[in-house]
Image 1 (cartoon, rainbow, N blue to C red):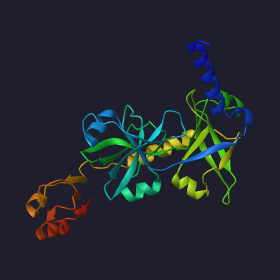
Image 2 (cartoon, helix red, strand yellow; image 1 turned 30 degrees about the horizontal axis):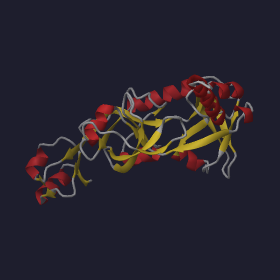
Image 3 (cartoon, helix red, strand yellow; image 1 turned 120 degrees about the vertical axis):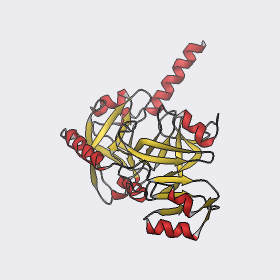
Image 4 (cartoon, rainbow, N blue to C red; image 1 turned 180 degrees about the vertical axis):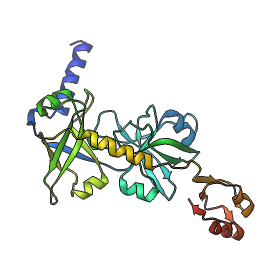
Length: 289
């Protein structure tokens, strides 16, 4: 056999292994994967956060072909708090984005919109802190909308198409139906529904849980779009609300020149008593990171 024939055979075998359509009915079953908070980075931001020319290193492959969890993690910070060791997913993307749960958003002090991954225009601000530098995203923080990845053959069996919205029912100890789950179809996808940790916890979903598509779903997407727009109008985060002070001494005089209401400083930074007094009197917060 020539090289081209061998390549075709390999592709067919891989496609068969990844294709669950022979076991599917129009309802499913749909494997469910739980996505914890994570970060996608563009190359320029990798250079800033880890050093010029740095390449992300693979920790393990993810369920979707070509995607991987990196060994590298970052701290993310908002107006009211920060979360450490947030995993980066690779490979690099055209634009950086951060996906969190609503519980995470409360801890950070932000109100990110519910969006499809990649739809970050007008989304919330967030700051990324790495070992070599800091990046402040003017937009890029979202709560990811539940969605299902699948290839065209699986979509045909499930009687759905790319961009559709369906409901997915799960029968656990706490049965639940997820509405407005978006269908995403591509030759490079493997069948799996993705939800965040809040959604998984609410329905007692664990590894191995599957769901079934409810085909009576009505097109309610416009309602969700309008609600998201309302939330976006409410959220006007001042880009100066958080500052990262890197000098070794924070004095009252230095603090008077800082507009931000929350100042993050290194644990090694010395903070004078007068600086603490000034912060308290002017409703400023000094946080060690």
